[in-house]
Image 1 (cartoon, rainbow, N blue to C red):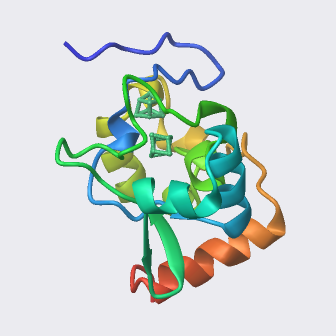
Image 2: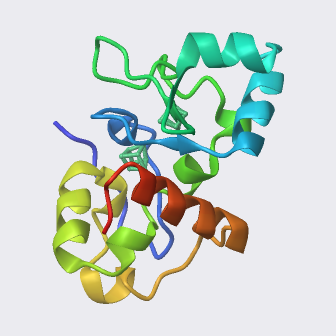
Amino acid sequence: MTPKAPLSVKFACLRCGECCRGQGGIWLTENDRLKAAAFLGLTPKAFSDLFLEHERKLWSVQMGSTGYCRLWVNGCRIQGAKPLMCQAWPFFYGLLKDEAVFTEAKAACPGLYAWDWARFKTAAPFSPPKSFKEFLCRAEGEAGEVS
Ligand code: SF4
Ligand code: SF4
């Protein structure tokens, strides 16, 4: 049975790993890539060869045969240097402006159990730098995920 988050005011990540599973689309900034490589004691090239894909000038995490990010092994292997995109989840721009997308995310993320749309859309617990927002818009545009 899927664990449920307590009905608390703060978002409680249950570290279930559901958000580390799927079709990819988890983009890394160059700074994310360098930090994660250093965290694992690898050169940027070795880290990228092992865990990333490079397509259309973008770095993204590789998904393994299990359907999980290749950096997921009973938890994120770069927990102390997670990409900004992973840090932002689930308080993400697309979710914060679209109730249908929020509803889908809520079904997948037990940490959102206690949240409803009215509360979620005004939440902003993650404040990424402006440069990251610009990066993400560019990345999703390059990947054809947003118009
Ligand atoms: S799906 Fe939600 S609860 Fe599970 S690890 Fe991701 S953010 Fe945390
Ligand atoms: S980098 Fe870590 S947090 Fe991000 S998808 Fe991979 S395992 Fe999950």
